[in-house]
Amino acid sequence: MAKQKVSTWDMLQTHPFAKDLDVETQLALMCEYVDRDEDLQEQTLSEFIDDYLASAGGSDPAEAAEADEEPEADDEPEAAPSNNGNVATAKAEPKPKPRNMQGMRVVYRTTDQNILSDEDGVAKDAGGVVAFTDVDGAPWSNVKRENVFPITLDDKHYHEVHVQPREAKELTALLDGGKMSTKHKENDVVKHLDVVFPKHPDKIIIAVINGKRPYVDRFVQLPKDKFEDDQKPTTRLFGEHCFRVKGEDHIVKVVSP
Image (cartoon, rainbow, N blue to C red; front, side):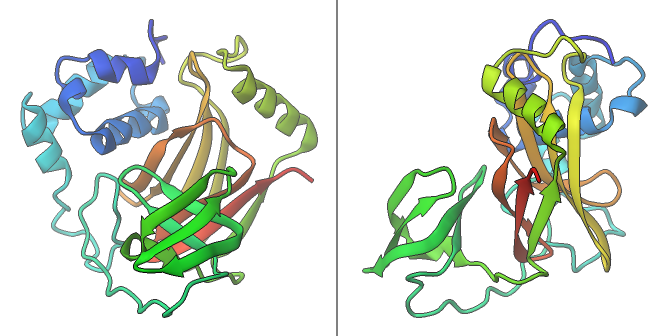
């Protein structure tokens, strides 16, 4: 792929049309560009955006975003609901919440990320709000109860992905160092991790991307080059991440033996 003069994210912010898209659609464009690396035949990000917007309904960003949200006629009707992503799907009926979630592990869903509580779970659940500490150690308080969801902790919903120690050390140094690797081209996928499911083709994707500021990309890949639940870039790879697949929340823990 042709080397960009600026980072992928910066290119999106300066592109005459892409800069006006909402954050979710910008992330969707960035993820699709990275995922289709082998198919783009040296196409630059700017060229990819122009072609993408044109095929989605013209150069008007609002029209492109609206076209992007429309499911294809032959998409499966039971496709997973999502707060983020480029696929509009039917929402599953929400499960009733316990009257008190204190001590339970939960996920707080925002527009661009899934904030997962640590192992201590909810510290307080009263007055329509909850308080907890997330897996990054950040405290959250006065979070509306309606936006927080308990997670089922069983083998079906909890996954571990292993990275060899030597590679883990290199990836940690890359992400913590904050500088682009000279061993890879800009926007190359340095490490690709996934979680597959035996009964459907959706996959959880966690990828380390080599940028001017290396980052971790996270989303759920669907059939026909679609994806959802794409979350804002992070610099943390190891530890727990949360994804929504087929209407259910899953925890993925990246570990090094």
